[in-house]
Length: 88
Image 1 (cartoon, rainbow, N blue to C red):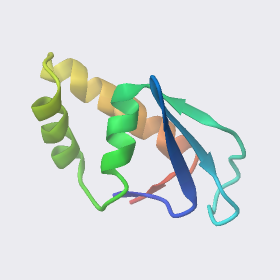
Image 2: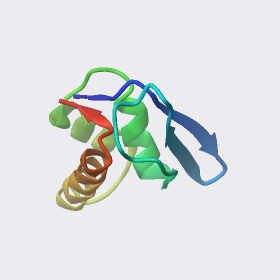
Image 3: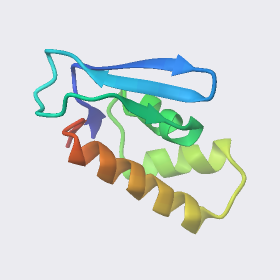
């Protein structure tokens, strides 16, 4: 899976904002504000990757309960799917 072409991101002090450009093939026309963890996931999705690879990167980067991290990952991916930001 990968972040769809046409979604631009910009780091901000406490996370990231993401917006679709005219190149994005989506009906979504808003701004997404990602916290640090969601920004980490979105940055990984700028290159082709899998859920397992993202999960491994999260475990390498953050201390925490893997089950909680997996739930958070699914929440982020579900939101990206909702706005049409993922190529799968």
